[in-house]
Image (tube, rainbow over all chains, first blue to last red; front, side, top):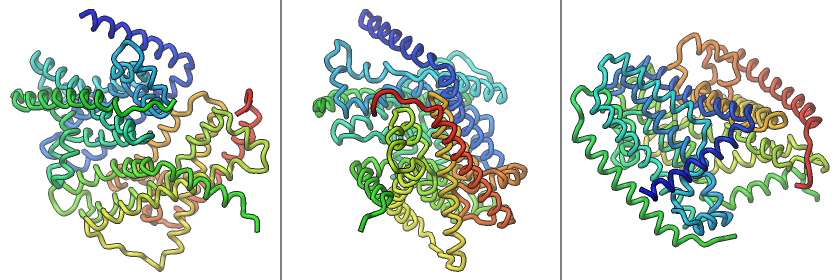
Length: 264
Length: 259
C-alpha cells in the first residue's frame, strides 16, 4: 500500500508538471485540443457515412456509435496517459538519456510510461463517454450495475493491454536501434479497433491474427453494454488473455533492458 | 562540370533517408494500414457490389489510393515548422540558396524514396488480389500532368501550414486538421460514392479532391475542364500564399544565438 501511495504521488507530481507546462502556452494548448479532437471528428464521420450506406454484421447504427465511443475512450486514454512518455522513450533510448530512468529508485517501466501524459486528449476521452451515453440512450436498453462494473474492468484491461502492446513494439528499439516511426505503426494497428470483430469475418487467417486482438478491445466492452444477456464467457476469456499479455510484456520489458547499451 | 546544387541536395537527402532503412519500411507499412483495414471491411461485406462498386473495384480503389497517398501526400510542414522553431532556417537566409526550393527538393526526395519502398508492397498486394493492371496510354500525358499538379498542390498546402510556425508556438494541431481533412475529404478513408450528393458537388470547388486520388479518378465530377480549372486555381492560390506568408513571416522571425 505504501508503495502504491509512493507511485501515485509521483504520478500526480508529474501530471501537475505536465499540465502546467501544457497550458503555459494557452493558444498552443487550444490548437492541440483541436488537433486531438479533429481525429475524433474524422472517425465519427467515417462511421456516419459508412452506416448510411451499409450494415456491418449484426451492428445497428446506435450499436456502432457505442463501439465508436469505446474506441474513443480506449484510444484517447492511451494518448492521454502514455503518448508523450512513449515518444520520449524512443528518443531517450537513442540518446542515452534513458540511463536516468535506470538509476532512479523507481520502476523504470513506470517512469517511462506514466510520467508524460498529453492533457489535450482529455476532451476526446470525455467525448468518448458522451458518445457511449448517447448510443445507450438511443438504444433505450439501460444499464445495470454488473454491466457498469464489467465494462470498467474490460476497458481498463483493454487500455493496459493496448499500452503493453505499444510498449512491446517500442522495446524493439533496444535491440534494433533508432525506430522512431515504430510508434506510428503501433498506433496504426488501432484502426482495427474502430470496427467490431464481425467486420473481419472474411479475412484470411494470417490477418485475423492482427484484427481480432485489436477489434476485441472495443468489441467486448461494447457487447457488455449492448447485449441484454451478459456475455460471461467472452468477458472472462478477454480478461484472462489481457492479464496474461500484460504480464508477458512486463517480462519482455525486464529482459529487454539487458539489451540496452547506453550511447551517452 | 559543376552539378546543380539542388541535384546535389536531392541525392544527399536520399542518402539521409537511407541511413534508417527499417524506419522507411515502417513508414510505408503505417500508411498502408488505414486504407487496407477499410478495404478488408468493405470487401468482406455480403453481395457482389458495395454501394455501387464491385468488390474488385473497391480493392483496386484502396490499393491505388494507398500508393498514391504515400507518393502524393506531402509532410513537408513538419520540416518547415521544425526549421523555423529550431532556428535552422537562419542557415538559408545567409546562403545563396532558396528555402522554398530546399523544402521542395527535400519533399521530392522523401516522397520518391517512400514510393520506391512502397512499390514492392503494392505489387505484392496487386498479385495477392490478382488485380489487372491497365495502363491507359492514351491518357498517359494527362495523368502525368495531373500527378504533377497534385504533387505540387500538396507541397504548397503543407508548406503554408509549416510557415504558420512564424506566428504560432505549436502548429501540431493545425497539421492534424490538415491531415484529417485530407484523409476524409480526399477519398482516402471512403470513396466519394459514400458521401452525400451535396457534399460530393461541393468538394469539386475545394482543393481536397485534387490532392491524392484525382489522377486515377479524373472526371469524378463529370466535368474534367472544371476540375483542371479548380486544381490549377488552388495551386496558384497556395503558391501566392506561400510567397506572402514567407515575406511576412521572415520579417517577424528572430533567432538568438547560433544554430
